[in-house]
Image (cartoon, rainbow, N blue to C red):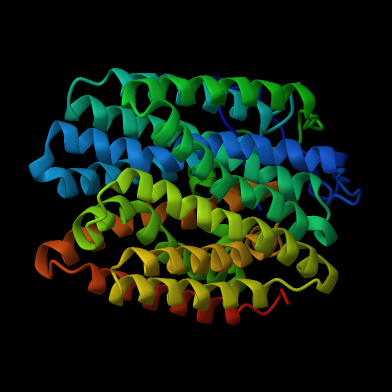
Length: 433
């Protein structure tokens, strides 16, 4: 299979010559066999926490409030449109970082140059959002942020198949997965309780991201990809390489299933603020979102770690992802039919259980359907689009449902059905237990 590389203008140096296919692979491209220590897992969790601490609160609290303050009458449509544009650029950033980091021959390793670049540019985008005087600049800031933060997301995810053996991946997946809800809660608490001002919050999050990523790249080591492993850059071959993993039925099923399950989850987290305001009529909706996340995350922490350990011991991934889809669907049904605060809290706990079980097996499942070790970054970035496509699909569905039906129950029922179908699709995967 032809391999392609990035021109010399990209971060790091890029391989540019051909090695015969029968040449023994260098250590950096071999399947890992050494278990990673707890310190490595915690460092990976910490840097992912910083990434999600900036990302989720931005879309749950900062951006909705900022848009509502600038144009309250059109807040739903503007949030949907800006989220859609950001989701498209997020996919581009994720795919490019995954594919091009596979071929980077920097002395820092394949992934770390992209992690550094993504963090610095994301921080600059957050500063721009903090200074934005109107909707056009807000839109530009979100688009830039989504592209840049996904340079980090793709590169960090690729470190797992790069360095973690299969028998440990569910545990590492659990630690990395905890970063999303923990980062969300810490960010929400920081914003809602400590600063409660959009501009200050943006600046603080930018600073936290830069500090933690700098620490991470200093303490984590990567093997260097030797020059001469990849072929010379060819645009046609490079673009064609993104279609190669779809020859694997299980890879394709995993992608589709993940999109549907995560669609359900994002429907909750993306529009919880407006749901509390418009359907539940909760008087302090911003604090309500924070309470929802704290409760959900408290449950999730216990469930994720426990499920991850069990998954590694059993060496089974599918049952965890499949059961998670049904549990998330149950939470969505409760939100659809019972828009009252006490039952919203019940749904929060169920979301914590469902998403915790999902996180414990999801990343491990993804890494076990990757077709080729040398393309880990690219192929995993394609699977990562399952985290990003719902950011495009959810605003479209929300816009249509709320505009035509004016119904949050219909919205959450659609999300529950999608999540349930996602679990059924994962059931069809054959190469992973």
